[in-house]
Length: 190
Image (cartoon, rainbow, N blue to C red; front, top):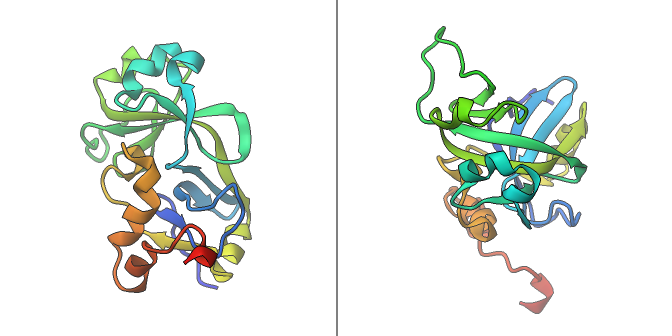
């Protein structure tokens, strides 16, 4: 199987993926290499406000200041994802406390004071846990047809309508994937 660059791309759960952890999820891949894959589910908000777990960061999480469930792994840990207002010029360096994932998206060091990054970022979200795959595991799932790999659109990582994200991402694809956006929650009831 040919190595596919997945960092910065979206994994969209196919209707065949019945694991409740990933049913109708959209995962932003944060890191993909020979050691495995790490990502966060972008369409699973929790009922927990950011102010309850990271009060200093809650203002930056507006307008949807809820913690998102990033995946089933390490639910007691938090990841911060931020979009920069402008992409740094090559060689200009990255803002302190922000590490590029892809383009203008990056991970935030949640141990720094948020004021250090506030002026630099246009969007911010906190994830409890993450989605992780060991070396070769995601490639096997892709070969089995569990995921569609698509390019992200601006705003996917910070959608204000997470309940519609799975359908919206599929709808903007071409051909058969766009048609799958109408796939019923329970095909037996159709």
